[in-house]
Length: 164
Image (tube, rainbow, N blue to C red):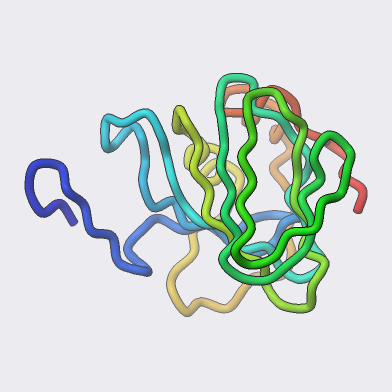
């Protein structure tokens, strides 16, 4: 909701949300869109299911900040696994290979900031709309054209055959 002069207040279930395909499973909330706000960043959350992962990838035109708010696992940065837990923050400059693995038995949730924005376009293109309180769907595959979706959104490179 816009209050005035561009101020926004977004409730816990007011943002567009999408179930995510394998290997992440879980869901995202796309809370702030740089295009909608006319800003240089986008922001949201991602919840990764237990034992699942965000594939390794790069952003060739973007910087990213990840702040873990629940769960634990590891950040895979340039092939090195670095433990992360709730409260950990990861800054990723352009072109750094990175991914995230939920090594726990509970969901792992993080806040993401991407500058400039655009990550929300990727999530909408590969996901399925999610409503608050809706049970998680059975795991589903990425779209057949995921590599093209990545190229036209915010990715420089992404692992098309992820291994845990």
